[in-house]
Image (cartoon, rainbow, N blue to C red; front, side, top):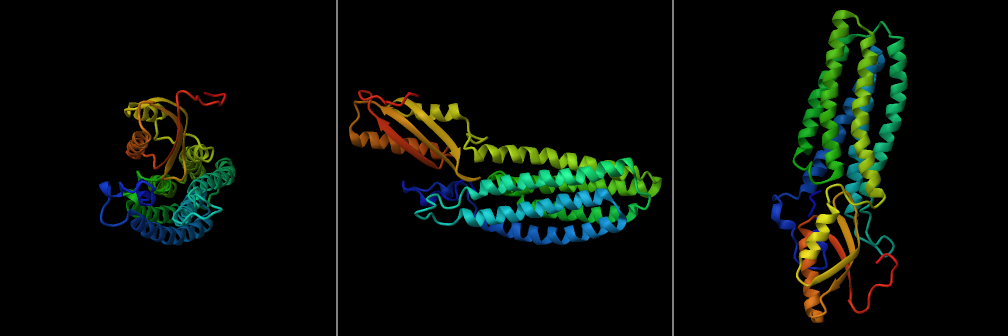
Length: 316
């Protein structure tokens, strides 16, 4: 969860894991949050879905779909965390770290499909409203949802800036609370005014909100799947960090990508000053890795070249 929680398995000894940790491993806190969040939200989805069918409210069903997507997101993230901790093997030399990215991607794709299905039915309802919606029950059920979503969101609040999946869970739950509030209002309005078309309209708005959130999750996880430079890393800045280390003459072939939702890797070719001895060059490499660690790059592989024997690759 924490960007640095895996540092201690590094080849270069000193771990930066200590410098902004609490006494509890954040992963443990997160696991409890995830498990509790899954149980609580699953129970609520069942209640909401039953109420949605009984009251014929499309808004409640959309909200139930939304909450179900959260449960799926939480479950996927939890499985991904477990997988990310699996030790590497000879076949899976990175372990299963990338499963965290696949979880985020799967979650986004599943959500898009759900939005499509619910959207079709909502538009249908907007055009042909049902006149037997019990707004009062809709409002009460959605009201319970606000409480549940806020409670779950608070569980994730502490760790939301350290990992894509946790941030996803947190944002999801916060949007959910807002969405449930919208459904409460529509239920009350329908109860007192009999504007039955409002149910379909609110349902469409709910879906639009989910779509906006899902879109950024989809793009973020897609970028990671394609080994793009992670969102929070500035390629040029990293290049400058390396160039500023004394002894570095030239840098090329730099690649930065995400190994998981919490860890980034880098490979590059460097030309170091010829005046340096072999041991001094190793010191420079060590220093560079140290600097990179402070810039959220946890696994750096550096190839050294000599200025006399330039790299023969066409890109150089």
